[in-house]
Image (cartoon, rainbow, N blue to C red; front, top):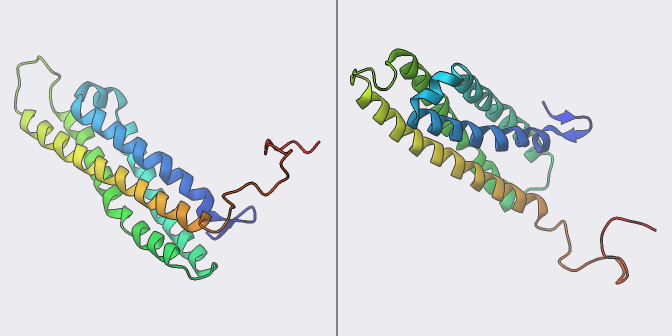
Length: 172
């Protein structure tokens, strides 16, 4: 996918990644720490993580197309290199989301007297926090580098309109 309605697909698809990866990370951590939430959400947790996972290669591919259609720039190259590192984090989110969902289905509810799933839940919770934090920080770093690449020479630090125009967009 290269263009959507005449715009580079990457600049549109990136919004899916920026929303779904941190959202998946947050929901994963909540469900890993609070098993009742995982039971209530059911398949929504792994499905959310799967959609986030599917959005990453689509966005990366569209970004690679865009990279070939803009001037070579160190900021663009840095953004592309950082973007290539997101997929393993999101694979981890999906695997853990499926695992947390499975653990929530297989272990008895709190207070039933069974402790067999406690160690598994603790391990899943710790791994979920680590991977969720890594994925979220990576999304931030990639987004920051992309914004710098896109905007570093595209605006003026001083207003370009007359002194009487406050920049509110009204033309008259």
